[in-house]
Image (cartoon, rainbow, N blue to C red):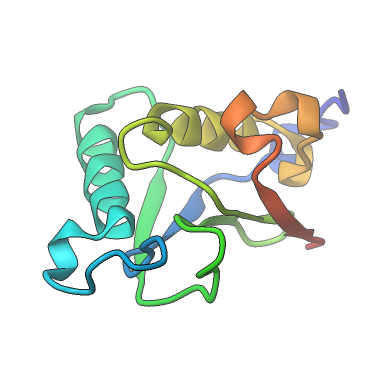
Length: 132
């Protein structure tokens, strides 16, 4: 694991993007509040609001992340840090692991996470990472 050279190398905050329109094939389009992506967003919002241990996270709903074959989609980003794109998240099974991943991300220089540093649900579900 890469060690931080200084506190300034660590992301100070991040944006957690969540695709609110994500739904499996043949899942009803309406009501939108029943879509798994929307439910994932609402659960993450609830968990962030009740937590006093998380660094600043901006939760950003996204209408569509074009991950239709791999719902539910999320992304992590921070200025000057690596960005990550994940699919296959579950509104009931992975919210805690997603927030654990955010905590790992914020604790690493420039947010550079190896596969083994991410929680299990976010190891195989990665779709890409983008350099700063």
